[in-house]
Amino acid sequence: MGTALTPEKEAERRRKISEAHERRSPEASAERSKKISLKCKKYFASLTPEAKEERAHKLSRAQKAYLDSLTEEEKRELSQQISDGLKARPPMVMDEYKQGLRKSKASIPLDEKKEWRQKVSIGMRAYRASLSPEQRRELARKYSVVYQSKTPGEKLARARKISATMLGRTPERKREISESLVESHRRRSEEEKREYKRRLIEGMARRWASQEPTRLERTLYSTLDFFGIDYHKQFPIDRCIVDTYIPDMNLVLEADGEYWHTRPDWAERDRKRDAWLRRQGYVVIRLLESVLMTNPCLAVLRALPRGISVFPDWL
Image 1 (spheres, rainbow, N blue to C red):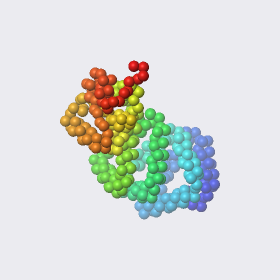
Image 2 (cartoon, helix red, strand yellow):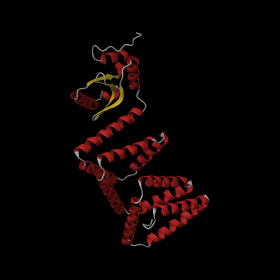
Image 3 (tube, rainbow, N blue to C red):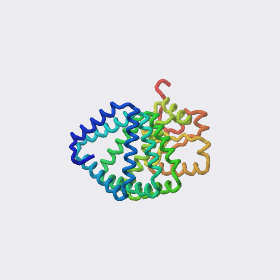
Image 4 (cartoon, helix red, strand yellow):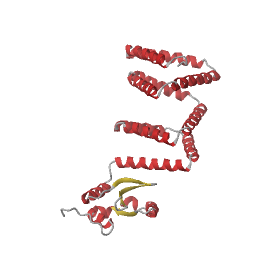
């Protein structure tokens, strides 16, 4: 990408390349990709490390100059064109392209990978530091919109890919990532830490609320619906996510399975959690499985504050 090209000439060049690509058959496209790949490999193998770095700097400066010359609308259009071009590639070409990337990545020495990750990390930190809080929230919102637009199958495939990547990491790489996350969190201001925690808790609450409720939760929700009580499922309260929150009564109801919540470690955790919620002014009631499943209506009525009438008009 040369700096001498104007946006109009660059668009025309891309259009001609796209038209030529569409006229080729899948086999011809694959053969052409192989030839280009071999030429690039030979060319890069002939370069010295200094020449490679200088070439990367020149490309980076040229790309930055070109992108800076575009308006926001032109940038979105260019991004869409690149995305459409990748999607239009034949599966055989894309498979070979991805396989080539994996082989290329596997051939890079570990020290070079680590250096490259550090450069990327420094660049990302510098970029985030240049953003205002409003721009960061807008960026997070855009990521959320893109994720929510995916189908359940795409979300599952993405989660499996991330899981496979994490399982394949070496202990050294895991420690490196952990240290990087700790260092990144340490550099945040107190306000940024609170905002990060708030967004994390709200995201977890939305994810849990979208999942299938447990048998105990279904029983509790159906009972509250029967009495016509307004409530929120999987409601975030600062650092906690509660099973049910009734705003009119400032009441938190937790449906506890006896297998887990009667264990000493869980019981101690629940005690500390309830104490914190009560200090914040909430009324906390825990409904054990044996009580809730035996007579759910009576269990809910006993949990409600005195003087509250919740019976339907027709009773």
